[in-house]
Image 1 (tube, rainbow, N blue to C red):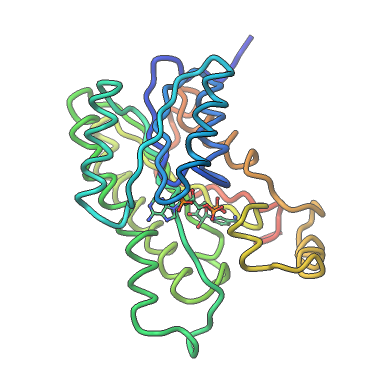
Image 2: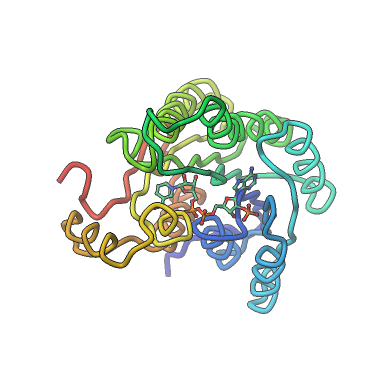
Length: 253
Ligand code: NAP
């Protein structure tokens, strides 16, 4: 039987305490990977995820640190290296937004968003490369957003950060591909998480969103996680430099 096999792989998932990152970490563990569950603040959530993975017979550990700080990212990667000896897969999932137009956006808010959504990915890639380059193998998955194309997802700060993440990814695909490292983007929209609820708190708003989706439903974290697992596995070994949209047909259908 064909299955997604991540056995013997070590994966670092940033922002894995909640939402999409949590689901990716759980799914990767279910596919056999050892998982480093990064979080910034939600320690209890990260620990409960690790416990859930262990109960299912998998291996995981929580690793605190903000991706917006290069020194913390270096420490995170060192901790994963000490624990598991390598890093095969990096998922740059940690991300923030706020619902603000250009008029309301204060100076500094663009920088803060960039610091997590773009620079966090940049620092993480820099710090995992010493693990990937010696073996000439690795997988990097960056979580962007359809907001990179539509301008949605909160405001100009968010859309700019996710557009930049796509350009960053395409360069990595060209430069790291010859070194055996594949880099791709998943661009979801309307995935039911705290993030979405912060943008659209009312049930009425959420109902209106459903009507924008040809499949007439919102997305779930598992919708992203299953594709991430496929991409991270050898089944996705010819996929590099792509942006794969998960939106039920909302953006272009
Ligand atoms: P979420 O439910 O708000 O969870 C965000 C996660 O990121 C949390 O685990 C949080 O950890 C972590 N995080 C935030 N800042 C961090 C930092 N500086 N360092 C490390 N971790 C940090 O968000 P989500 O909906 O799952 O979103 C995950 C990713 O998908 C984001 O990149 C987002 O832009 C993208 N996305 C989401 C949607 C959607 O509809 N939900 C659509 C398109 C794209 P703590 O709780 O510990 O702070």
